[in-house]
Length: 250
Ligand code: ADP
Ligand code: MG
Image (cartoon, rainbow, N blue to C red; front, side):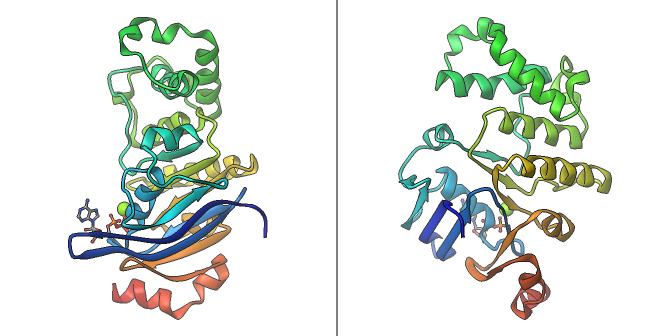
């Protein structure tokens, strides 16, 4: 086994009386694509939110590259290289595509935003070039001066991916990257993620489309009702009766 980049240890999280996560242990190996699957309400988003610092676990810890993320603020976790692409696209609809991609690149460069300098924000030529290159990689360069609001749903996803990748993450977390997509856009997203995979970027992907999961994942963890019911290679998970039961019975 290679180096472990992300290590979730004994994490518990409740909302009132509801145990959203119980005793979660997860080791994500450097350079792999690890899928987290499970029925609605299984705790997948809650798990991701504890990794990025939007939620603090009741107990347990999250280690990244040997350091503890537990108790760090979301922006601090982002600064160490953990980047999440959200379940609902979080883009700036009134800005152009180029500006959308420049914002996270600038935040990465500056460490924070100075909003009083908003007018000069987009004049940084290095960042502009980086953002343009990223739009080109994702096939969005021709639309760089369009307002993001006018993009198709699939292109919004790609824009969001560009906003994540431009930060040169060490770990990319994707929460249902193909949710609501037509098959054509789903296939484009699979192709894109396979390209990204070749760069050696470590990814955790939450996804309920099994076609996507089996096309991309090196390992799969199955969550149901806040606990891990199975973990293994795609073949191991596919043949596991507990998984079939969770999907059919859940
Ligand atoms: P998934 O992403 O697997 O669909 P979630 O992690 O969103 O599941 O939710 C797991 C459980 O925790 C669900 O029962 C959900 O209703 C509950 N839950 C999630 N977030 C909150 C919250 N902020 N407050 C209360 N309950 C929540
Ligand atoms: Mg979710």
